[in-house]
Length: 463
Ligand code: ATP
Ligand code: MN
Image (cartoon, rainbow, N blue to C red; front, top):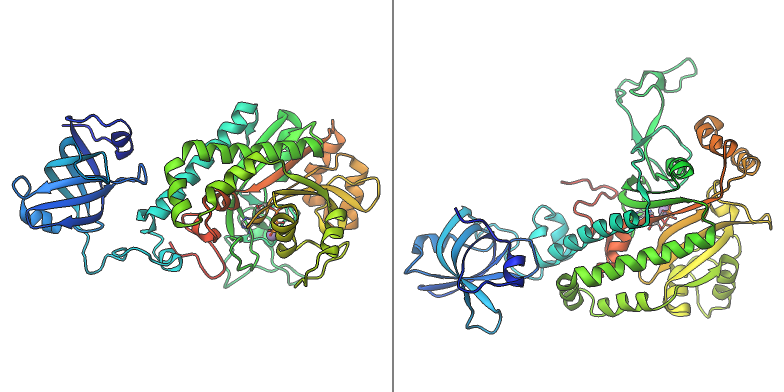
């Protein structure tokens, strides 16, 4: 038995004259009664290998059954191709048909399906060039993330997906329960009695691994998480999912400046990695999805991010000759339209905004001496808006405790978090990068639903 060779390997170092075995799915078939040309894709690369099948070698009935979408194994000789389109092709000597694909009902017959149509066929969209490229790049980025942090001596920390803490503070949460919803146990006050629930308390799906990440950083030094997070926010936007993946590094002894430097270096590393390792897929996406994609990636690499305080950003937005949908003013949160103005029109490059009003940021951010702002940092990207949110953390026990009280956060939810400030506290910082937003930027895909294999959004959990 000959060993299967992947198309990527076959095309990158073609061994002309050799017998090869390839397996994959038929993208197109054309030709005549006697000679048929099949473009075969096996997912290893965006490029297809051309199979030439002649009825003198291959049964005519078998060839008729090989239609778009069918899965086949082909063995034959690799030869130089007389055609212009490709260097080499395989002259088929034997074809096995693993799976037919009915020409009448196969949904991906023609080219140019809409993204919406493909989303409804998410089980098959991997077989299109676009989604093949997107998901190969998604893999490359996941790998690069681990490589980046591992090379720097960070430890990959697995924080829990199910949390008993209601204080993560990043958004609305999904409940986790095994209680009978038709027949909820109640206590004497008529409230749901969670003592009878699986964990003996109320539990939710995490919105962030940060708080647990901090516990790790305050012993291991530098850690990162990379896992799924959940937000039950009803935001139907091209940038929000109910289930998304987040990378959250957390570092002891980093101040906010170190934190910004790491964030900038990290995203630039990922972009450089994509340019160096996902070339064919990026060239395809640059041609089909966003003609400015590769230039945009290079531009981000070659320019320093602008760094401004929130107060400066508000001044810029107030001075802008613009009618805003959402009002601008000190103390109000920046909306997507404001973020995009700063990045795309004012600074014309990625921007890091720091020192936000404490009222619009989470309780754990380090308080500035002005009593009004905290050491927060958001990284804003063209087309995406916020791609990273982070901060230096409040390490002072009294300040943190008072803020928790001010915000009426139950201490029972955070006693363990507070203890790290009691025993050997240390200055530390961290941030969260939304993985899908990063993939959107790197691929040029405009809707976040098209950079995760099976998107979870309001009213949609198909597949
Ligand atoms: P936004 O204001 O855009 O909703 P956020 O302020 O809620 O973002 P954080 O809580 O700071 O975001 O989360 C850190 C990062 O996670 C964000 O910078 C973003 O990249 C990503 N992110 C947040 N919410 C979502 C979501 N619903 N879907 C996908 N990515 C998200
Ligand atoms: Mn949000």
